[in-house]
Image (cartoon, rainbow, N blue to C red; front, side):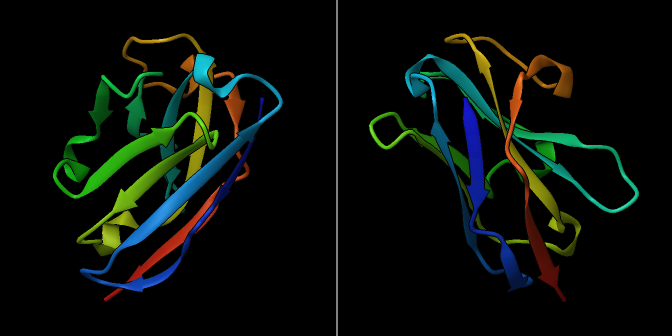
Length: 124
């Protein structure tokens, strides 16, 4: 599956952005999806994930209540709605996919496919 992330940009503290990740090449509905981020000088970290049915989601503690992951299996797209953004949310955000319907996957090694990343910059 090929993944194309978009929606990043420059936003002020407290603002919102919605990231999108469009998938192509394989049936999207058979893939568990995740979002990760990597800030300068830091390792890539898990942000959020969703099962195929969207019935199971998981979040990094620091984004709970501010970020929401969702997916549209008809449009083959996964979204990350980010509200109340903080400077520490500044990073390149990556979407990722692995085959499977459910589970808990927090590590980069759990995912087989990656998008190219989209930069989110939160200015204070």
